[in-house]
Amino acid sequence: MTIRVLLADDQTLLRSAFRVLVDSEPDMEVVGEAADGAQAVALARSERADVVLMDIRMPGTDGLAATRTISADPELSHVRIVMLTTFEVDEYVVQSLRAGASGFLGKGAEPDELLNAIRVAAAGEALLSPAATKGLIATFLAQGGTAEDDGRQARDRSQRLSVLTVREREVLVLVAGGHSNDEIAERLEVSPLTVKTHVNRAMAKLGARDRAQLVVTAYESGLVRPRAE
Image 1: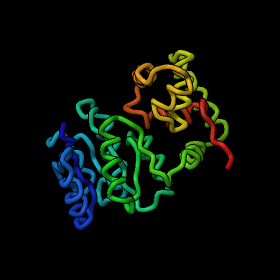
Image 2: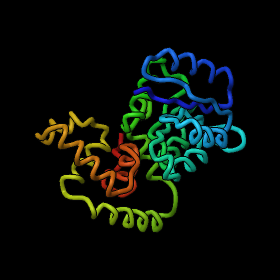
Image 3: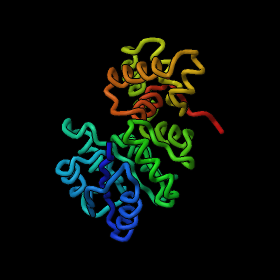
């Protein structure tokens, strides 16, 4: 199956470079280019994109707003979004994940990294580039609001996890730790297929679009906490 890729960036030269790279691969093709978020949303619908490479900062409707719109549209539930950022250590990283992105990648990434990101996102996996550590994400998720508000929100989110079985919670913790299905299977001494089943059930119960959203839920609920470096 060919992965249909949409490029959303206000820099024409950068879009052109991405198009040449993506179109050079036999398993993917660029189906459209957008210079702002509004165009990205419209093209995601009309061109039936599978993956959107979305710049965060664009004029008019920015990448975050466009991501929220796409993520909230049931007809676009299959669309996966990879946010592109100039600086990977960026407060917008977690806002992107909360908005519904499958992950993020720095614009300075190597060509192979970018192509891998598209394939990983298309497969429904969480994409966190090497420079974007879990500790960074956890730190940003822990920020904002008063202690009272944070406590209340954490309790509310923790209650959401009550729908999970003990094994599903265990798997969720390992997913949040960045482990693959094969790694989780080895740790729990079960088959990768069994792990995949637990992950899919957890996603369905928590209303998560993909593994990236499971990571966010795990941190926001307090099930997984930031570790001091």
